[in-house]
Length: 574
Image 1 (cartoon, rainbow, N blue to C red):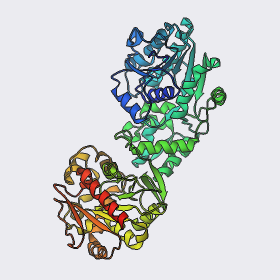
Image 2 (image 1 turned 180 degrees about the vertical axis):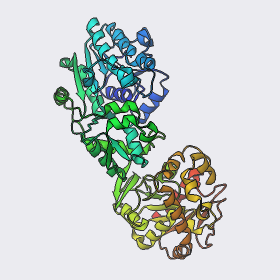
Image 3 (image 1 turned 30 degrees about the vertical axis):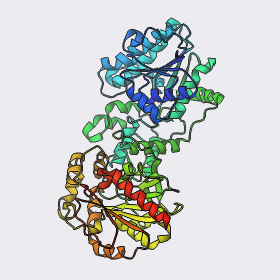
Image 4 (image 1 turned 135 degrees about the vertical axis):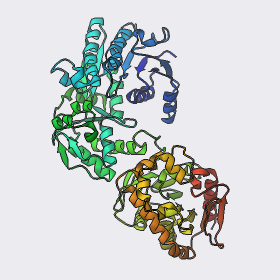
């Protein structure tokens, strides 16, 4: 099928989302990627996009002709150039090959299309500052200087060749997959390493939501009046940097820095101390930009920006869900929610779950992901307050659990692992009318206090510095990538201390919890691993999983899921 739109840089953060938007508008799209197209097609499949009108082609914008096939693209009307080399610390030649020469090659290739309607080129909002002088690679850094030079080159070449051009100058585009720039600052805030903010109270670091931006881009060629025009795309309602960081800190449940350091001083301080890349500092200014033409165009197309504060919160959830780009995001709904008095990381169905999963230590709610994908009803899981991604607790875990389950309709199966078996057991005792069945997986209160975490005086510093591989080894688990997240979270301020304190407290409550187990009135099922030495009461139903240890939900999710489904069916039959 001949393509009428081509997206260069289609494998990138902006390009792939633009492909989605064009396909949903019924366009025949050629997605031009630098390498293979497998990652793009897999990502599109995850977005549940109909790719019947999609063609994936290889391209290299650094080459004249873009390395595109000589045939099959003659019907192209609209050319979107989202290809760019975006990184800090590049050599000038590396940056110019894509951002300057590559941008010129796109104009030249487009000029040869017999049915060309428009070239849409993405530049950057700091191009307004480019009028102050020519790009300086030494002063500005290779990325910023090459984008400025590329902007001028594209405009000049389009005039020479008579190419209808529209330039979009976005600010920081936020959305799933954006892990650089402002995301670095959010990461430092999340890890408790952002001691002070660069700049003063009026620093303006504007953002624009990804979904809005790609809708705007897709609309440009449809309107003849947008030809030979430039649009600054940013949300004027973006708070000044200190307020923006405070908003994100509140959402994360962490403390925002109260001090600021002048940009000039940050430039002179060692990078090891400031954690700031010198090239990012040019973006820290009080400059404002004329967005009137972009706002008028958007209004004529019926486009409306999402509220910027909500967009920032949603993006923050995306960053944390993927561990700032290190792990895939879960499919279930996820994000920070207020549970009682605690900022809590929650995944899944808050109102109608068939299963509620509580994690043990030092893992998190994601330890249940494989099991949750194998059971027969929606699931709800959350990181306990003080652990994983949740903020430190302001209430007891018992009160937190009651608040988590308050909106739940019906009587779900309450599934707890190890440490969480205590709060789950007490909740079932206090609220039997809210629990369909109680499944205790490897209860810590049935385990002898033999773990090095409960005995060693070095447990906290060792745990804090553990890599994912070492953490997996200490827990008797294979390292399959899951523990990258929990290992990173243990490095956050106070996390290791809280884990060790909680485990020692749990082992101290063994007698009381063993006694309470005999008083539960809801159906109870124990699930244990063959290799986990537990002291199990003989009167309780026990499902033993062969060759499993203390974390069967991680090593044997199929077996665990079978027992959970069985427990739910038995409870429903009562």
